[in-house]
Length: 169
Image (cartoon, rainbow, N blue to C red; front, side, top):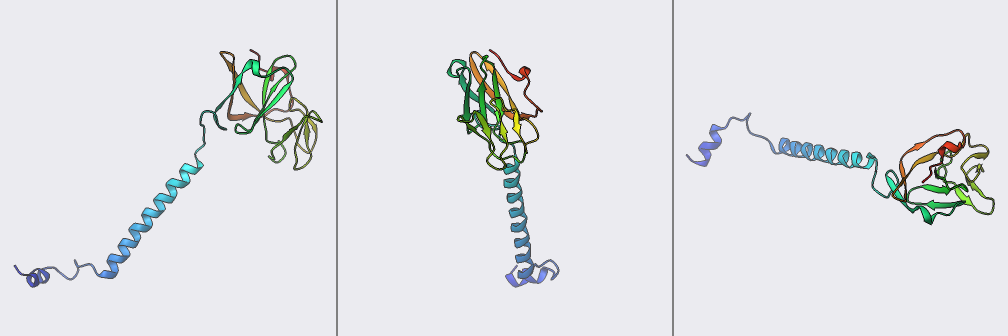
């Protein structure tokens, strides 16, 4: 069978034109691009719960490294670890309950201060002056084998400080 005979045996309907071939190729590449963008978007939206980072369990350190009455900031964990005068631990979220700005600890005032709208919180995260509507949120504190750990996966809301929120060794 010669080349001309083969071409003659193929019906005109089964031949793909160059234009249709390019359209099909462009559609396939477009579908592949949409799939890749969707996969990247889903990976971006997944919660990050890595050990030692915000969204996971952060190891703060040995109990003895936090003297009573101290407040230690953990920027990567987005919280302050408070060791109350009686030895109890409390981890407060660094996020203001008004509009979510990052609060900072002012040792001169002995208060947490929100730079955005001027809310102030006492040394246990209780609201001192508005516009924040309630106390700073907290994270679960875990003490295992003399080591303080903070679970930052889920903030716990509270209206005000209660002594039952402190965790003891």
